[in-house]
Image 1 (cartoon, rainbow, N blue to C red):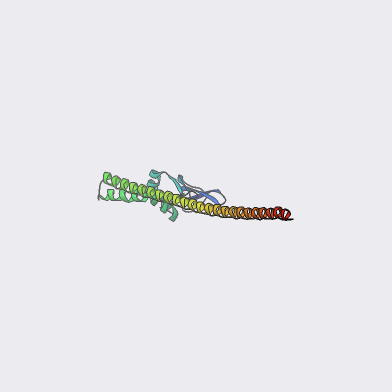
Image 2: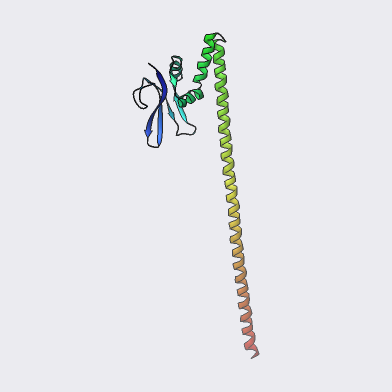
Length: 179
């Protein structure tokens, strides 16, 4: 029986959620399967993968062929690397402890890269927020200046009108005195 490691679709319309399953090559995509070894949710950022590492490795070693998407998932999780390292142990290139040390080093390097990426995203988000805040402050200052100019112009006009009224009243009081 030829087996395949592939995705089985679930979830609602426009919100796909996949199970990673072992199935016969002839079985339909969402049909009968032998074993469920994990899940894959592409809707989160980054995509969430929950995988039974040992079972995935076992099925690869007994000859199950992954689809392209599942191959990428297994590669990112390190299953294909571990299969490669176990092949080196079987050939006698190095021992089991060395293989495990290489795998742990790879996993640590990947984790460091992921943390650096997260830090960069957080820094970019903070910088964008600060830029937005400074732009808003500039806009508020411009509005405040425009309002202050408008009030000053209104006060000047009011003072000018009062000065004219005072002058007119003074002229009226002087005119009857002369008469």
